Image (cartoon, rainbow, N blue to C red):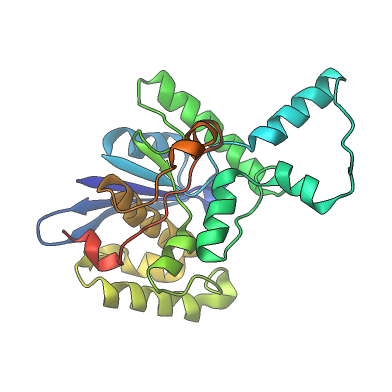
Length: 248
């Protein structure tokens, strides 16, 4: 099996993509690019068995309806427009709330935070994949699945905060040490130094590992009640088993 992990950003400079090859004896980081452009990302998503993308694959359904109604001039006035609960229904997707319930982490709002810039790029990438005949299912049933590296790390008992940015290189190296200690079958090879110097690289590798979990049925899927929302809003695949179980 070949999986890819994409740590997507609005610009190429902060975007990373990792390819992980799975064999009977372990997993090898086969290729890693920091500063990946759209063509490199599309190549990854086109040749792998499963690609994990660290980015919302859609917007909250109530937010979309709110924006459309406002655009058309037929928005019904909310009863409590300054209420936090009302804004919450617009800001977060169903999958964001589920992840919060399971991990205690609340992801950035694609409707009300800067990650929306990245999601715009992601939407364009998904459209190009669909045009090329790739199966695109925002709920995770196709080649692409949405992932959240920090939540994956927390599930696996690894540091999930404080490793990002140049000022946190020590914490990043501790994370890499922990990752390779728990998963000695994961061979970073010539790319280990890149991972130790770039949190984008590490997030891409974690995304590729999470894609493996999704591919072999060791990650969350939307239940029947959430499937319709997941099909439009996207659904985060959260690992449900220890990291060691991926090497099976």
